[in-house]
Amino acid sequence: PMLMVRRLAEGELAHEERGPQPVRTIPMHFAQLVQANTVDFATVFGAESESHFAMGMPLTMDIRIPINLRRLVERSSGIFGSTGTGKSFLTRLLLCGIIRHNAAVNLIFDMHNEYAYGKESEEGEQVKGLRELFPSKIVVYTLDKKNTRATHNLAIGLDEIEPGDVLSLSRELGLSPLTTDTNLAMLHRRFNKRWLRTFLDMNGEQLEVFSTEVGGHLGSLQALHRRLARLLDREYIHEHVSHNVFSEMMSYLDKGKHLILHFGRHDDVLDQMIVANMVTRRIRDLYQEKTEAFQLSQKKSDRPTPLVITVEEAHRFLNPEMARQTIFGTIARELRKYYVTLLIVDQRPSGIDDEILSQVGTRISGKLLDDRDLEAVLSGVSNRHAIRAGLASLDTKQQVMVFGHAVPMPIALRTRRYDNEFFQEMRQEPGKVIDLYAPPTPRAETLKEESFEDEVDKLFGR
Image 1 (cartoon, rainbow, N blue to C red):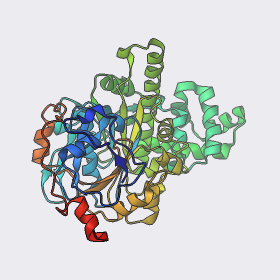
Image 2 (cartoon, one colour):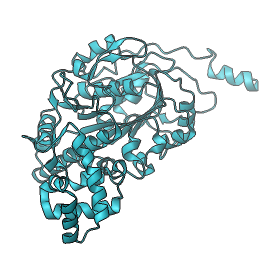
Image 3 (cartoon, one colour):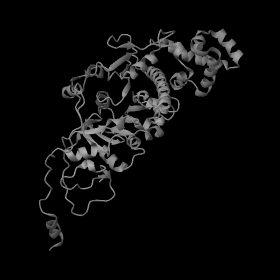
Image 4 (cartoon, rainbow, N blue to C red):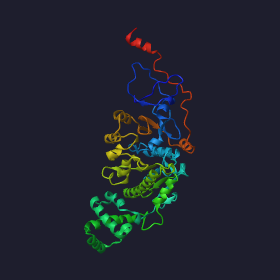
């Protein structure tokens, strides 16, 4: 047992209690075992409401179990599972709940074109994307100019790229972080915002002159020049842009819109690192400014709306080497200091830095086949042996273990189907709180009908 509720007298209402409490004892000998009913589950997990969204049902029952969305977005969360366990559809499911219930605004990096638009499921069914389900709430930015369905094309000016953006790309560009940091600092001091454009315009002779003037290492500057020239090949990077796309994004978030960055054809690691790091750094900085303004004014109207940033292939951004260089590691460690949290989606949680994983509040995991991944998902979790046993027993499809901040106790669920019935529900307004105190559904019969005294007599004699 994990939770307990004081037995209520006849006619006594559950809301007069403090709710489920951690178990401090074990059931007495010969205690009657009954199957939990709808009211029991609602007493523990809450009922579907404006703040609670049903993710699925217990493995052997048809009672919808909700998670607390307000608690979910308070801390970073993670969706894990081996290849083929349906992480993308599970992520869609969760994002639908957040969007429909207005629990937070979302910034979704759609790196594999899974979320914005409809696609065919493994069963051959056409399923809807978030843009199709919530057309008035979703704004799509795309890196791919051939995508005519997007709301906006993402355009980044060279003068908007800062040294910190390049430093976070050191690994992908094959640069030494130490020498790169030194060279970038020299360039920025000399040329300010136009440092990158000016540097890339230099020829070999000009590089030598600059190296001599600043006392830099010519070889490392030449290597940096060659690597940064790769940025000019990106069709979404321009010498100059007419408006600041990051301020535009923040304006949409302020209006309660949810943003999806659709990568389209630009799905290699360098594109993902450039865009995800740049956009997230700017949005997080703007959120920091808003939070500090709210702390000064203490006006409810100034309170920032919580922001959830969804990132796939999270181990690329949050592995031990990169976690201290990218903004994602900073956000994960800050918890909700600036009202910004992460939704991490990954099939290799063992590749994520241990410190980052320990900050993940709610974890939703499908089946994991690698012992290292199992250990990673359970890092910092109490009652890990029981949860590990539950994870090991899951089927590959449509079964997950949910545990952490958004649920009062771990539970294995059959996830809801992402189908037409679900789509129709998402188009409706969230329901009000279900009446927990309506007449309960009949309990299942106890395993034996004999009275407590009969059981004792049978074992010990009269």
